[in-house]
Amino acid sequence: MAIKNKGIKSNNSHSFDTAIAITAILLIWYIISAVANIAFLPSPISVLENIFYKFTDDLWLHAVYSLSRIILGISISLVLGLGIGLGMGYYPWWDRAFSSFVYLLYPVPKIALLPLVMMVCGIGETAKITMLVLIIVFQIIVASRDSVKTIPQEVYYSLKVLGAKDITIFRRVVFPATLPSIFSAIRISLGTALSVLFFTETFGTTYGMGYYIMNSWTRVNYVDMFSGIVVLGIMGFILFYVVDILLKYCCPWKTQS
Image (cartoon, rainbow, N blue to C red; front, side, top):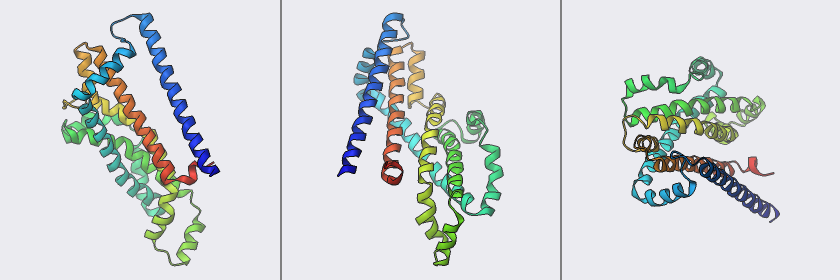
């Protein structure tokens, strides 16, 4: 009961801190917009009212398109990244085979690859998803590989003496041990992924938050532009919050204190 109460108190405290942060941002925004009194910096009140009315019109569709691209990119990255990263951490020969490629490709700014990706994949959905995968997958590969390497070899020896197969060791030991690092890698890469998604959505599409924001800017509709920015920020906040929830659910030993 004490643990449960502590968890409830922690959740309430987190919600209160979030509410304070949102209030502070809106208040600072309101003061700056009132003092500056310039057309391209609308009041947060007008922006929030616009979101309320426009969301049921077409804003929700742009948000769904962007969110679906992010989720698909993360899903593909997890499949590829875990397959390569866990293998690199567990099998020395696998590490030797892939480490050079990872070290050469990981530091390259992924946005610099956008022209190449567009030439190969076109300017449609495939290029957008590919860019997201290129950003996220390397984070997962490196995080999962390094996490596996921290597991003492004695753990493997003991399990193999008892007759455990590699698949059992991966399922019972390796994968659970790497989960916290994987969630951290996803959290770190989300910010960059959203930035690149915004950039790619200005090409070859009529749906997505990137398109909505830039289209509003070209129409000199600053209220719509800021509405898109706020919705994109809310999407990022929700994604971060979902990652935190999944971390608490999948790795309770990391969140109990």
